[in-house]
Each structure stands twice: as structure tokens, then as C-alpha cells.
Length: 158
Image (cartoon, rainbow, N blue to C red):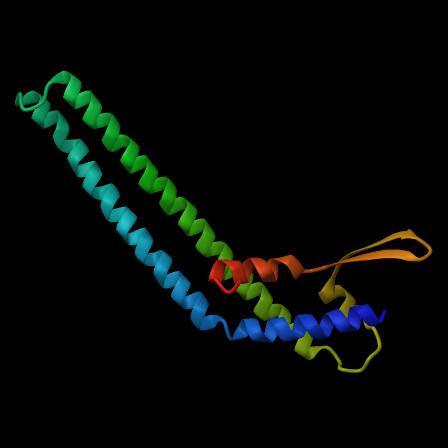
């Protein structure tokens, strides 16, 4: 099972490097926070315009048709802003969770004994699933392997 030990060393290198991504994760979080603030302000502004439409209709400033068209447009804008806020919040939460998982995994891997024998602890940390397809055909699905690349993509490093 040399492949497992090799994968552990590769993952450890990646995971320790992930610990150094804290500043990038913080910068990305600040960027998303700024976008969320802008979207909230935009939604509030459109809600204020929406609230003022009826008054403009009653005062004769707007026709019934203008009122309905403007109302529909403002409602669409508010809903779009709220959907974007939800998506950004979910993305931000996922980014933070991925970074936490990698840092946690790095901590666990550094605690694993450095001798070359395969331990149950190492297998539990690294391997999601082992599939035996035949006597000489074994496939191993490692934990967090593709997620690490996703984290880098979100941070713009790939």
C-alpha cells in the first residue's frame, strides 16, 4: 500500500499549504462581504422606490400602466438582489467550511506517525472508499482530493 503512504505525503503537502491560504480566504470573504453589502443597498433602494410607486399613482404622477410596469421591474430587481445574496452567502459558507476541513485534515495528518507502515488512523483520514474489482484491480477514492482543487479554483489559484 505504498500508494496510500505516497498520497498521504502529497495530501499533507497540499494541506499544510492550505493553512497558508488564510489570507486569501480572508480576502475572498471581504470581497464577498462587500458584494453582499452592495446588493443589500440596491435591494433597499429598489424597495424604497417600490413603496413610493403607489403614492405616485394616487397623486396622478404615474398612470396605471406605468405603475404596473415599474412595480414589476422593481420587484424583479429586489428578487434578483436577494437571490444573489443567498448564492454569495452559500458560496462563502462553503469556502469557509472547505478551508476548515483542510486545515483540520492537515492537523490530523501531522499527528499521524511518520513511520512507513499503514495504520488504521491513516486509512481513516485519507480513504473514502476502496473498491476491489478483481485480484489485481483495486481502486481507491481518497477524501478531499477533488475538493482541494475546488478550493483553489474558488480562490483563483488555478
